Length: 352
Image 1 (cartoon, rainbow, N blue to C red):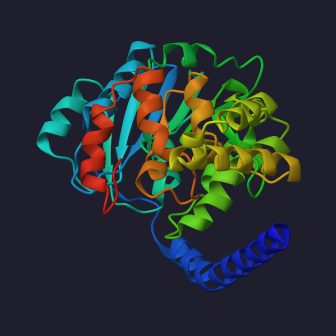
Image 2: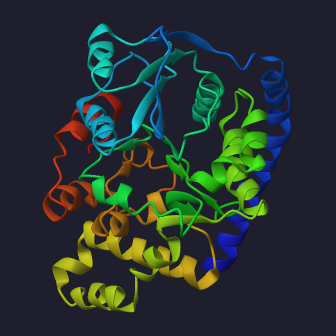
């Protein structure tokens, strides 16, 4: 009975998505075609910018034009690793304190209108600096859709081996089609000089529809690169994360139910349901979003981030996300105060 209900709900979800897609996306695509791809308001410095062989295009959005200390630390770690950071803000403006701090870290700052989401910003950054340059060895595209880093990222950056793969992501997803998740993508020499790279970014338009951006650009760039014969890999592979939710984990959870308190404890129940959700998805080959359903396994495996959307809205209805604070603080040893400061402004009618 449960399986039939699940199929019905999946059918209804796909039906609604289809109706939304075909009624909403065509006019949004038309807007993207007629809208100018140039949305830059200002740049710093106004003189020519010298970028090193390894470049980071970092997309930012904050409706108030602020930049948090945790984000600045993220940028500093890129710089400490020998990379030039270009900060691209879709906020339309930055506060004076934010600009002052960014100037001490970044090689360049671009302020633009919020058109085209992160791919619109990256495409404009690539076009503005005519990337890749002759000496460019690596281009990292990153954004602020994550909280963190919760631990240093130096080791992570050292693991980007372009002899093993041409394009690296931190995580990979099989939802819709296989792709590297776009909050962090690193392109090595072979991918930067393949014609597919230039072709892809040349056709990115500022379409005002996030579902289109996800399918056409986030999923699309991995598919385009794979079809061109380039190798895409993730530092935290999907299969390895799913394996961490193994039979031993389930047995330990079921064993704990011998306690009457555990059997009636809602926290225990949500943990069990999440384990069964992941195990069920594996059994039925249903693709999960690793940065949502496998957040715990990621953090315990050394992953330095947690998605903002997961803590703010939890759109995938992840059962055990109420544990995030204890896992991050007590098991990972992370400083969670910067996250709590943001959540105090974000959350409505819910606790962290």
